[in-house]
Length: 337
Image: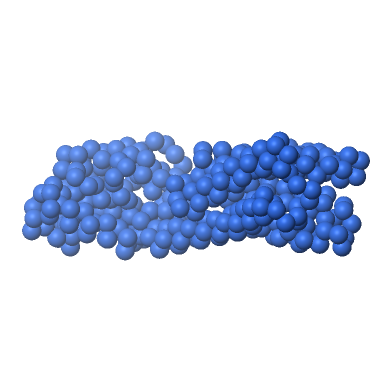
């Protein structure tokens, strides 16, 4: 997206030097740079949103539009036709980008800002086509008329707002990624310990208000040190990632999985009583026994909320004691406290 505003700036410079440089620079190339900047902005938006496209079609569009601008500048010099063709072409590119963003863009302020700007400038281009059809196109871009002043001002404002929109989208993405890095384990993409404990505290606060608390499970991969010693740490990391993926698949949307430390994880089950938590534990054991090369066995210690006097430290302590019993009783099982 960043290349688009640069091309728009270059186009503006060429338009501004009309009469001092050849027409193929101030008209043909200037118009093409403006169109190319808009197409580049659209392709950058696609890439930014994870939907990279191909330049094949747009290369033909650029080649065809270049030919049309040459014809309307040298062979059939006609200002109104040139402006009309340019307005239709730009409106089409805007429409393609607006449709893409409405379908794939997030509901954030920067995205909505770009969408609104695109929609408004499409309206300006439509007004320009109407003015051409009614004989108010003028003779050249720089003539001192109300229409030309309005169109140039709208163009400048659109370029400015689209540039700001691109910066805001990038800033918003960076903020989101930094927040994710601050709250998630980089290997397993589960919550890190600090974020996990914060979610647990929040859930206990809700339990105090509504009288219906969570269950907590503490999970530890069995014989994980032997896996690292035998197969190496890379294989051990792959086992941790596989375990986290399998566990996430059997959890509810409201449940939270976090890496407590090393090969030890904690699952927060909001609003789940002991029976519901036991069912989740059974699903986790079953998910890790499917025959996948990275499958592992896990011991689980589980506890549930016991009333308004409950604390997070007490629940974690009980879950840890239950986990120890599960290890002592033979591993690959769930113990309840």
